[in-house]
Image (cartoon, rainbow, N blue to C red; front, top):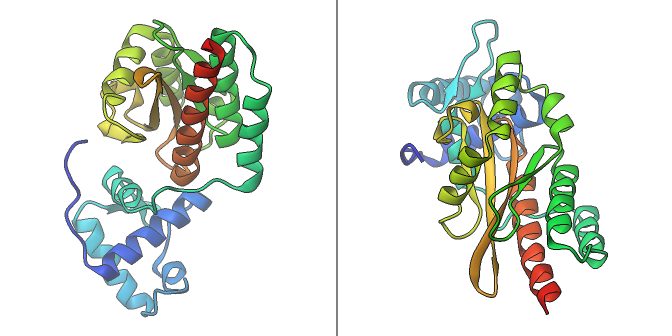
Length: 250
């Protein structure tokens, strides 16, 4: 992480969360009127506008030149992620899909890891990466999801992402460095050590086999990511992958 976001007052925090939530949902810059109309805000658009200006000065929001609305910066997303309810939840169909997948898991660990990447990409609708246990390669799922992601507006962003995915050594090094921490880790934009991922977000969940670190699963998408879903899916899949590999090993 590039630094801890400064503390915010309750109203600024509420406004910031509303802006991030709406921007993730719509992809459009968020205006003060839209925020003021949300349940729980209970202040005028003028007051919201003042708070948004302050948040911009603090580095949490930015204003596109062509719009009166604002969008989150990496720092804004970081605040949002750090203040999500723990743990974020999955929908019942998403949980069921994970359950069915691991009930019918293939007996070969490599094939299991490959299919797990496809599962994770299907649930989140982003790219996904799995590292088989104690291996020196990765499997990539959901490349088509990355290619059609509208939040990656610039062609060179996609080109750099695809090039990074082909550099397995660098990708593995990054995943292992991130997964040295316990639990789900989120790297947003410029927090990513690989320059090619500076306009993307990475959600990494390590998994263990017999109590020892064995590999990682990760979700790769734009900074305008549905973080609760990505975090919950990575965590749930990592846990089930760990248990399934242990069961296969007997």
